[in-house]
Image (cartoon, rainbow, N blue to C red):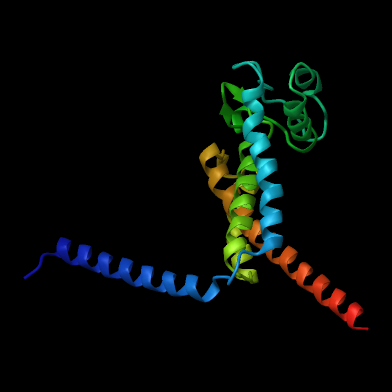
Length: 212
């Protein structure tokens, strides 16, 4: 006779095996015959952008980039600090961050002792975009409203509750990373799908013109 603990272990193992089997069948059903070229292009562009954000903090001496916690989106209030960065490559990404992100230090990741160009949530969205586009290289997926909401709602709730000051809630960089990555993943999959479908339409139109 097995005890309750053994039963739950066996049950969990059974569920895990069933899940893996279903996941394998799902992958097989949605796998592309060949890598999708439009998605490769989207992935490459997004990877360059995300990689530039990761590299930029390393192009300045350690501990020299810190913007404080008073920034506003689009205000250019960190323009002077950014102008002191020697690398033009890094300045480009930090200027982009200054124009499109609040760049609060307490809501940002640090690499090489330097604040990253964008806040934790923005950086995580970029990361998710890369993952989503990467997935679309090998899988043919379509998103319905449920999956889109499932990906976007956690970030909207996390940021919205904090913005409105409800329940004295203050998000953390871990939550910003998790919710931002989910939103970016869904958006990246949608972007890969759109780019792939637009390319197919363009190819069909070209063939029609040539045939005409």
